[in-house]
Amino acid sequence: MRKTLGMAALAAVLAGGAQAQSTADEIAKYREMIADGNPAELFEMEGESLWKTPRGPKKATLEQCDLGQGPGVVDGAFARMPRYFADTGRVQDLESRLLTCMETLQGIPASAVVDGDWNKGERKTMDALAAYVVTHSRGQKIQLDLANPQTRRMYELGKRAFYYRSGPMDFSCSTCHGEDGKRIRLQDLPNLTHKEGAIAAWGSWPAYRVSNSQFWTMQHRLNDCFRQQRTAEPEFASEVTVALSVYMAATAQGGVLQTPGLKR
Amino acid sequence: MANPMRIRAAVKDGFTEVRVLMSHVMETGQRKDSSGALVPAHFITELTAKHNDKVVLLAQFGPSVSTNPYLSFKFQGGAKGDKIVVSWVDNKGDSRSDEALIA
Amino acid sequence: MDHKRRDTLKAGGGLGIFGLLVAAGLIKPELAEAAWNKSAFEAKNLESALAALGAGKPGDSAEVQLNTPDIAENGAVVPVGVVSKLPNTEQIAILIEKNPNLLAAKFEIPAGTAAEVQTRVKMGQTSDIYAVVKADGKFYVTKKEVKVTLGGCGG
Image: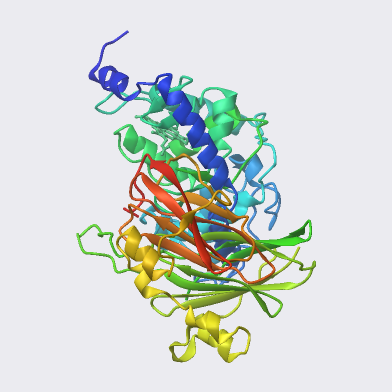
């Protein structure tokens, strides 16, 4: 195996240990205590009202938005995403599908989100809308249509992207998320290549983050991991981000969604 | 204008349990923004909860209460369909009042 | 899931909520006088915070329970629950010793309301948390240390 600067640096940050176990137990207790009353609910309420508010040049609501279960059907939609949409001819995750609805129904250009800043303007709107939609899949099983050839293609692409090393440290997603029991300081890093870890991760995003009181979509989470990886920032809702989501969701297939989550 | 609260109230064993999430920055006044300027304090100072017309809890908050505050408490009595009203004011004079029915 | 949206309450004339409630005849003026206790919330040490609460030197009581985690993963959100088993508990206050302003929250418990509240506080660093309870006109205290792995006052 190649010895790289990356591996040495990683060995330093990924130091685990038995002593960390009791701390991990205490932190599990902490998380349990704050699980009830997730402030994500505030974003969900805002999202619901945004969903029903006429907006954009066309002054339309999103109530006719087709998230894959038919126009206006929100219940269970996220549990089946990402999925292939015939009208756009693309596999779309929740965020990219919301972009489509905002553009076609409301006339809000996708660029308002894609070229925007996190926690501002239409990207912030997107956060609230995502919170609303995913709440209506909470408790449901992740059920991707893996028989669909387009979805399969994205799965393969996502898997390749997951193992693709890049950046000055030569990291891939799998460097940090490809083994059990890894952690950076106190942060447990889920093993996203196995069902259990994938369910824990995919099944609990988007999430409210207590550290900064912000609501993050998976697009935001992934963007931050590209930063962790020290590689170029992916474009919002770009093909690689959707492909990675298909890979993670497919690995989590059958797991129960706990969305929206509550994270550090 | 402040965003709505989420209020949940449910009867259990003769008590009504009330859980409230408020949307508020709860700025401490100690934090600096990216340009190094102090962000002025902005936090909820007083809160009141009523069951029908009876006050069931009064609270005062300081800036140490977490952003998007959470509060839970319980009172004796209360029946399904009764009204719970929660109101707050903050140090800048903003206020908000929301209601929910006991489930 | 039931929630109704309401227009914001117009806190006219700087009355504040308590003032409005008094004006509406909903609470007794004594309670309104308890309106935001500036000196208690601005106290910088335990002694002056207790003094401002009128608590003086409260006695330790096992009847006052503090429910917190031993370790908080993030100081921005530390769950704190206080339960008082003391009869006629009228007031519950939560103080964080190492925070710049010690007093985090104070609750008035009317008759019929359980002496049991839960909220969440910010902690800048590992510190003792105090629960101060007033029951039958007397003050009692209990404390517990909470370790913070990441300070929560940066926002």
